Image 1 (cartoon, one colour):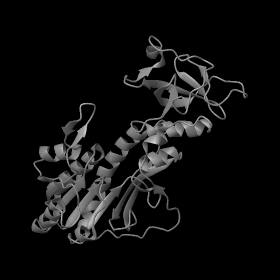
Image 2: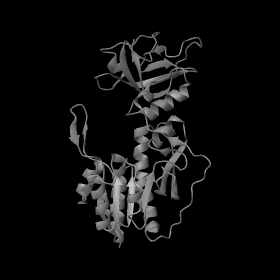
Image 3: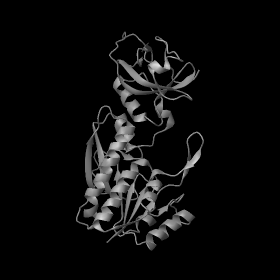
Image 4: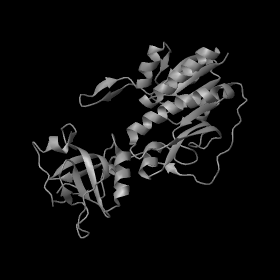
Length: 324
């Protein structure tokens, strides 16, 4: 019988948490602690909300800690360290927790920390592997179960579980698929990790890439890129920070991008509105991209037909990269 702790914060971590809980129940191990980030203000009203993992843990009647920091000589960091030792945690499972672990914490569990990472390591180490895979047009991603070490996502790997990327996937749909795969991956690998029968293999030094955190300004659409790049950019930026440009001096979020069947003159400048027929059709460097959903600042997202009742895009106008 082994005592486990689970570290995770967003919705992505909920399916893996449930999978670990179910596995522990079936095999007679104890999931004795869940650790997530603190409650945060959210939305327009800035109402304080609990992270999804906290709500899921409370439904499972598992105690929750929410340290503000993991550093030594801080109330939260010291309490977490003392709790891990007092509860005799032998394995910690990490799924999108959102904090860097200190060597002091990593040394506590007998079997260490394992991290469930949303890429096929060593490709896309770092904070935004889902978005970077989409942005670069990857055809495949997956889940890697790895031993956590101080260097970011550099630990030895227990197993990799590939997942094809559908051309219609955006960051939301791909994240949901990977969350379910993460839960299944933990169900498959944890027994071998717990009894130490599952070997680890070092990551190759070939093919290392880094998935740096997204910045809000990365959402700005560059229509002077290829149509394929603009569509991949749109898929990656879905939700946050969103793919956007400016028109009539206001910020416009464009979503659900695909190749348009409408053709334009080769001399048509990139960023030109080619048509507003049932979608917003815009000239890219090498073709026309259509956006099926549009959101003006302060408004809900709409189809082109819905939007046209109160706002007009004009064919022939240019979309801007900034406010004038």
